[in-house]
Amino acid sequence: AALATWCQALSPGGIAIICFWPPGTGCEDLPGPWAMYSKLVMTACGKCFPGAPPEWPTALIPAACATDGIEVLVDRSLQHNIHWDSAEICWEAMTRAGPWHATRLFRGDAFVDSLRADFLAAYTAGEPLVHTPHARLLVLRRSLD
Image (cartoon, rainbow, N blue to C red; front, side, top):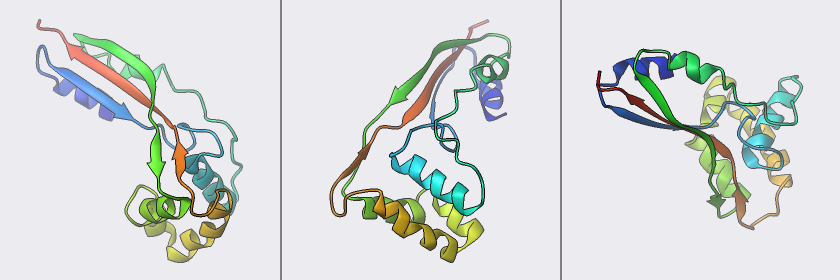
C-alpha cells in the first residue's frame, strides 16, 4: 500500500528511489544475525522457522505501480556489508534502539533478554560480526504527460 501511495504522489517527471529490507527472514540466511534473531523469536513463540529466505513477491511491484505513467527503471536485489564490532554490540544496538526494539516493546524485556545468550552463542565473542543482507532497490519515474 505504501508503494502505491508513493507512486500516486510522484509529480510529472518525478523519480522515487526506494531501498527496503524484506520482512522477517527474507533478507539473509543463517548464520546472519537478522536471520538468527528471527529464528530465535519464532522458536520462542512456538513457530516454525522457514530456514531459507522466501522469494521476493515480484508480482506486488507491478500491481503497486499500476498508476498511469509510472515506469519501473530499476528493480533489483542489492547487497551491502554491515560491520559490527562484535555480536554483543549488534545485539545491544538492535534490541535497544534498532528495529528489534519493537519486540522488546511488544513482548517485554524478559522475553528479549531470554534470547540474548543463544544469539551470542552463535558468534565468536569479542570478534567483528560482518553480514551481507539483501535489500531491494526500486527506482520509479512518472512520465511528463
